[in-house]
Amino acid sequence: MEYRRFGSTDIDVSVLGFGCGAVGGLMVRGEHEDMIRSVEYALEHGVNYFDTARMYGDGLSEIHTGAILREIGASDAIVGTKVRLSPSEYSDIPNAIETQIENSLSRLGLDSVDIVYTHDRIGAIPSPFQGVISERELEQIVTVFERFVEAGKIRYWGFNGLGETIAIKDCVAQFKPSGIHTCFNMLNASSVEAAPPRFSYQDYENLSSVAASVGAGTVGIRVLAAGALTGITERHEIAAQSVAPIATGETLDDDFNKASNFNFLITEGYASSMVEAAIRFSISFEEISTSLVGLSSFDHIEQAISAADKGPFDGEVIERLKELRTTFITNTLSLIHI
Image (cartoon, rainbow, N blue to C red; front, side, top):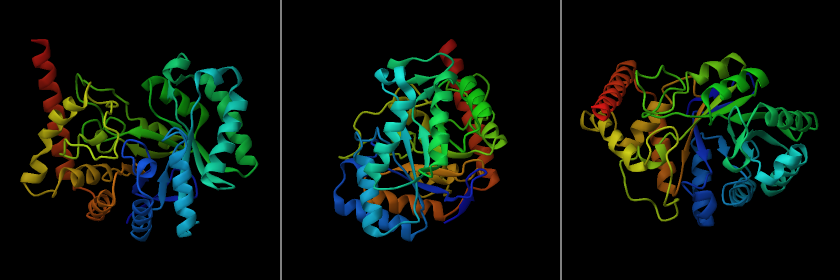
């Protein structure tokens, strides 16, 4: 397993991260034995970053993740969690964030956590019922984060890099977080690469370069595009059965249709499966510190680690993917406007 320094922190993270979210569902709705087996296997094969949140299963992911890591004795695992404001908490943000961090530590069974992120989208104007915070709310949240760093209860803090691109970049540049989550996959690589002309998805305008300029590590999320880059339309029984795309098509079916353009990776022998292709694509970019993969079963972590161990794609494949992505997105838009 390859490791990368997480921004300017003293943390080295595995290029493959263990996603503990509700979309895959393993650490929320899975059987205890499956959780143990999967986490043990991940650790044995070099995965050291586990990403959870209060919102995943209303705290169940944090409870399960913390309990499994303790049961295994994995005290050196790197754990990240997240806070998110409810509409009623906008009136007293410092108290809300302080309470949420303390509750997360309690659920995780930890005295200190490696990194805490905001889980809200970032925009120019706050919208409590849409889960959007602005610079004003972030300033109050960061003040609490810094206080918890001084108290030794969190080591680092970061942002969820979803929302309005300009607002995200401005807030990253202003507040200088230690880490940021960003959507990154074969359908939308604009966090690292220049977007093609007339890009039909959200353009993140090379957000990773802004993150790097302030010393922030970058966590790639939606690496499998909520399942659209698995090549499998049937969802696992414990996975979320209805998932909205982020930063790609309007529906998951749209993303599946676009993803079929990458089938050459399998037919021409570059990868054995679309899952392998998606993971190897994500780890091909050093700008992405770690790539999170959502999991529903032990088989999923086996597949993910096998893919990561095969290493990045070479430059020729990456360039071909970029050209193909440009072509099919541009042509699709041309057809729409006819």
